[in-house]
Image (cartoon, rainbow, N blue to C red; front, side):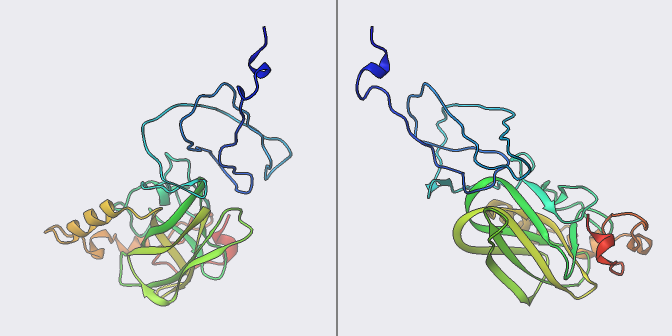
Length: 264
């Protein structure tokens, strides 16, 4: 009895949107529902060695709809989260992924932010996989009246970077909404260029794409009766001095340290 391959046209092969030109931490390709018997995964690159490793694999059908553009998902929800396997791969913080934990309330002079020395390094977020991204939102450290300047770049391979926002000549405070032409992105790099208080750039929260619902909640709280002013975050002046002799970030209120003390 002839097998399926014995009948012309009874066996078809196809390719899901390829990621062979993008760097990925976790891959979640969305494709049109279809009947499948076999799935083949071929690794094409590893940044460390010549072996392709998979820890887990799942294949499922879902009624959830996805918007695809150029074969990539256009996310509606924030994909720069720990749950979505995003990671801060450059930048200094007391907690590695504080920038992505969604906490926009509990930060002060000593913790709850990620930073880098002006003129050296950056804050870089790697998403789990490439997405079509057209906006991000940042919360700059705002426990006093300082302002920052910065620019934002995106990349799919950490080699070629595209600048999507230039605010190097703008005095920026607190929440920052950045919109740009939608394009593939696996990495987002935020580079501080100025701080009116010292030589370090501090960022509390990052989301991608910008979440309008979160923005509305922030605005409603600002109009409330509670004390949400920057002064409400301030601690005792003694907290201005970060512990010395370690690689922890400098306090926003403390004099900046040399780059070799600031960066891993």
